[in-house]
Length: 251
Image (cartoon, rainbow, N blue to C red; front, top):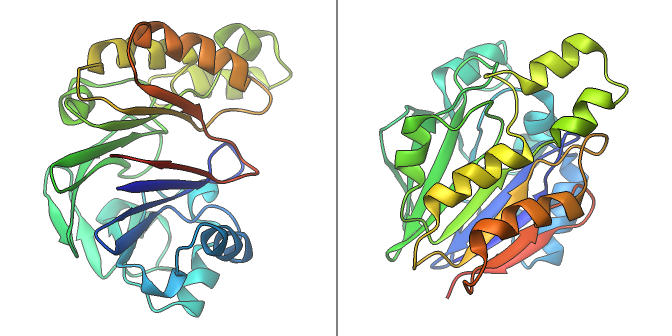
């Protein structure tokens, strides 16, 4: 399996999961032009995707979707709540439900509900050939359901959105600070570390810090926090960014 994080952060998110000659795109939150450019650079053909999946309807996850779907005949998969929140702009070919696994080519995809201020947001576990990849971003807390779904994954892509002190002392309006730090906001570095501490196991190969805030975090802080539960292991730790794609492979 190969994971290509095309973009991850408060300004836009997109992830390709590729295995067995098949590929899916999760979220389409940067321009179609950038998604195509970064996919081509990674050797992924946008026209041969099995599906585009949405985690939720916020702009940083769908802003390039309308143009992308016009240019490429790729089926869209989203929850009913996400589709409704888009006000009829998109009609999913496949309606996703938390806890209901779907097959996309040779990939098995399990959506699970997350705690975020969107209509029906989900994270995903993608499986192929016994390998499991777990994605959790845009969640104010790691719920018991999320922890259960992410157990025994070979790769974990976990939100580490903000440093609490940087958020508290930073320039954001107080209401926005409260939203980010709430149970329906975004995971902090410390929350991501605590979650990873629960999910580390001998089969884990890769951990990627995701959805970093430009204003309230830094890659160095994320690496410092997420490396602690991984001390003494052979797990590869990476931090995804907004401007350059990140590619990692599972053996």
